[in-house]
Structures are given as C-alpha cells and as structure tokens.
Image (cartoon, rainbow, N blue to C red; front, side, top):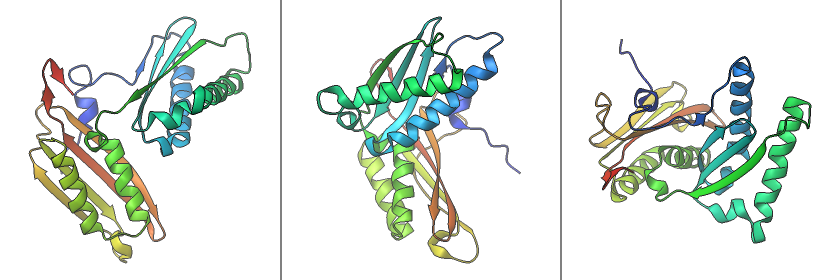
Amino acid sequence: MGQKVNPHVLRLGIVHTWSSRWFAGKDYKDVVLEDYFLRTKLMERLKIAGIARVEIERSINSLKIILYVSRPGIVIGRGGTGLEDLKKSITRFFEQSRKSKKNMPKMDIRVEPVKDPNLDAHLVATSISDQLIRRLPFKRILASTADRVMNSGALGVKVVLTGRIGGSEIGRREKIHIGTVPLSTIRENIHYAQVPSLTKKGYIGVKVWINKPEEKGGTV
C-alpha cells in the first residue's frame, strides 16, 4: 500500500510558502480556528470570482488578507463598493468570534489576479467539479481539461476522478495523465488540489496535479 503525501505540504518552505503567516503563544489554537473559518467563509463567498487561495498575515495589531482571484473586478466592485462590503463582512466575523470590539486588528485586504487560471490546480478542479454537476460526459471533461492545461504551458497534468462517475451503481476510478508529474522530486513546482463534486448520485472526488513551468528568477 503506497504512502501518500500531499504534494503541497511536501514542498512547504522550498517551493511553496505557508498560507497563514504569524506567531502566537497561548492563543495558538484560537488563531488556527479563526484562520480556518475565515478562509472557508471567503472561499465560499468569492467562488463566483474564481478564487484560488487566501493568504493571511498577522502582526500584533494588524491583519493582512491576500486574495488570489481570476476575476478581481467582481471582488473590487464598481468604485470599490465590493471591497468595502467584504471588509464589513470580515469585521463582523471577527466581532462574532472574539465577542469584543476592543481587540479588532487593523485590516488590509489585497486582491491579486491569477496570471493563468488554467495553471492553478484549485481553479481547474473547481471547473471539473462544476461540469460534473451539470452532468457533462466525464471523458470529454478530462480530455478538454488536460488539453487546456497543457496548451497553457504546463509540463504535465494528472486528473483523477473517484466515485459514482456517470451515475454508475458501483464506484470506480478514472484518470488522465499527460506529460511529466514527478511527485517525488521536491524541486518541481507541483500544484495540487482536491475538490468534491456533489452530484445527484453522490459525491465524486476530483484531484488535480499540475507541473508548472519555471520562469526566469524562480518558479511561477
């Protein structure tokens, strides 16, 4: 039986950085939960904007939230109204979690565009999940997704579907693998994401590995 390791965790500090960056003492468990619920809330709210990931940086009295989205205009809104509404929503979240307005940190929200959505594993997995919910043929989804990723410049892509694919009575596993995706080489810039697809027949697990190319001066 193979011992599987999350490709992102394996490369932390070498290729990828931490999604939450801060130091805490006795409040460590509370801050971890606060980050988890805040990130979950933002990922659900900004799904329509094509959100890829949320990074949180904390200091003593300040909080910096970096949102990586494929459509930043939806987040910012006309004249910045969307960003103001988002800031109010996050402020309410902290007021409810801390039950006090005295300890509110100074907030800074940054919206960063994703250069190529076809090279982001989370956005690709979300797209596959949405297509499965719409009951599109899974073989066509896998083939078109792999072609789109490779045409964007990826060195390799692997997509695995598990569950009651196509509404079958017995769960099975389908995959497509194009190019090279060396999971044991730590220096490779492997992006990984796992997104469930809730269809009428049940859950279908979607896993995506993308071997991103290197640019001058480092990885993408």
